[in-house]
Each structure stands twice: as structure tokens, then as C-alpha cells.
Image (tube, rainbow, N blue to C red; front, side):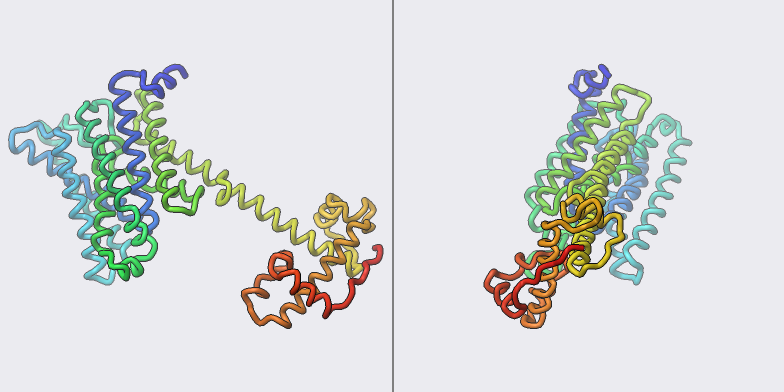
Length: 404
């Protein structure tokens, strides 16, 4: 516990601090960039992009070795990854535009071919004298033990630039994500904005390879915005929440990994993000499972309350246990099932409202008004007092409800 607290407070050592800061910035940027990918319904594109980086990494290593280097320069490897991802993204777009294949089929084809080609290249590299200790397999799941200052700076600067560009392009990307046709009608160049959106995702994919790896970077791009969607309907808030979820996952995951060196940082970050998603899934106040269950129970209680009052008004026997419990709890009936004065008054009001709605539907042809009747909405929320008085004049005086 003390070790984890030290890691959280950035007191667990120089390398652990670098990894924690880098993971936090990367998670924040990934959450924000993935939001537009999620809203655009193109989550699988990032998957293809991530897997398409593998042959680029391997080819960059071979090129650097051919020119006399050791092949481990991070900037060179990431440059190769970015070029390969860009080619993969272009191929997906080309297949969708030039063939009858759907986007998911194009993504599957590009993903599998590029990843298979990358694995073959890694096998070739491992057979080379310089390739046996290259550590390129770390890009699959991420590895932070050997992270240097310049690596952390590269991740931090890249993440900060991505966040800045997202803030600048937030409005046009929001329009394109929700309604490309409307965005085009406003004069926006949808293709270029889409390209910018994919470029930001590609940048996050590339700079996140060293931390979480190409297999898990997709989780850091998608889980935070999906989590944020449970908490808000507004894009600006969703961006902020997704960034905070990604940043928190990166921070806590890196800190936890620092206290247990045998635990890989990338998978821990993804598991913490998944934990935040699970919490939101169940406990988000409006969209969570618990909120849905409670809302369903409230609706069920309202239905039984209304049906119980109508049964009292019509002198019909009530046998449903839930209806009886609700009426007793509200003081509408006594423990023996006999209606109280309060219950008879509420029952009379409920029955009169039914008759008012019958008159309203006969008089008003506006479905925007009469169509709102669901048996539960109070008529006072739809019609004015004068209109209700007119309905009452047509119905006649209220009739008392007798004891049941």
C-alpha cells in the first residue's frame, strides 16, 4: 500500500514518474480523440490502424539497421509505424470507395493482412544477429521499463498537441460526427475534417505503442468515450469526461504497475479503464443499469397506482399484491382493503381525469396534445385550467366514490 501511495505521489523513482506522467497525458489525449471516433461510429477503423502499424515498425527497424544503426531509435520506429498506419487507412478507404465491400469487411481484410505481414517481418528480424535483442515484440503489448526521458517527452508533447488540435477542431468535427450532410451544406469540407479526425487517432495510436502496445491501444481509444457516454449527452462534457477517464486509467495503471514490476503497464491501464466502464455501466445516474432498474420500478409503481385507483373508483376488487401494497403505503386503503377518505377522493379524481381525456380527444385533433396521454401524465401538465374547466362543464359535476 505504501509503495502504491508513493507511486501515486510520483515518489517511486525517476522512471516510474516518467511512465506515470506519460501514461496520464496519453490516456487523456486518447480519451478525447476516441470520442469523435465513437460518435462517428468508426471504432473499428482504429483497430485496423493499430494493427497496420506492425509492419511499419519492422520495416523501420530493418532500414535503420541497413544504414548502420541499431534499429532501436524510438522516433524512427514511430515514424515507420505512422507511415504504415497511414497506408492501411488509405487502403480501407480505397476498398470502401472502389468496391462493394462494406467498411467492416475492408477493415477485417486490411487488419489481418497487415498484421500477418508484420508478424512475418518480426520472425525474420529475430533470425538476424541484431534482431534477437531488438525488443520489437514489446510494441505488441507495450513495455515501459526501459523508457527514457526523450521517450516520455515525445509522448507528452504528442499528447499535448493532439489535445490542442481537438480543442481547435471540436466544432467542425462534432458537426461531421453527427450529420455529415448538414456539415457539407454549411460549407465544411467533410473529407478533410474526416481526415483530420483519423489523423489525430493515428497520432495517438502511434505514440501509444510504447505504453500499451498496438493490440491494446484500441481499448484506450474506445473505452473512455463509451464510459463518458453514460454520464452526459453533451459533446463538450463527453470530451472532458472521456479525457479524465483515460487520464485516470493511465495514471493509476502506471502507478500500480510501478509497485509490481512483473505486471505490464499497458494491460493494467486497460483493466482500470474497463473497471471505470463497469462502474459507469451499473451506477451512472441516468443511463446506468441501476438507474434503469429503478426507473422501471417507479414506472411499474405508477401503473399499479393508477390501476388501483381506477379499480377503487369502479368498485372492482383488487387482488394484485403489489397494487395493494402501493395503495396501503399511500394511505388510499386500510389494511383490510377498504378505501379511506383519501383513497376515495384520489379515485374520484383519477376517474374524472379519464373522462376529461375522453372529452379532450373528442375536441382537440392536435395529436401533439392528445397524443401525450399515456394514462400516467397528469392532465394539468398538458392543458390549461380554462381548458380543463371546459371539459368539466361538458362532463357535469363530480360524482362521489362509495366505499369498497
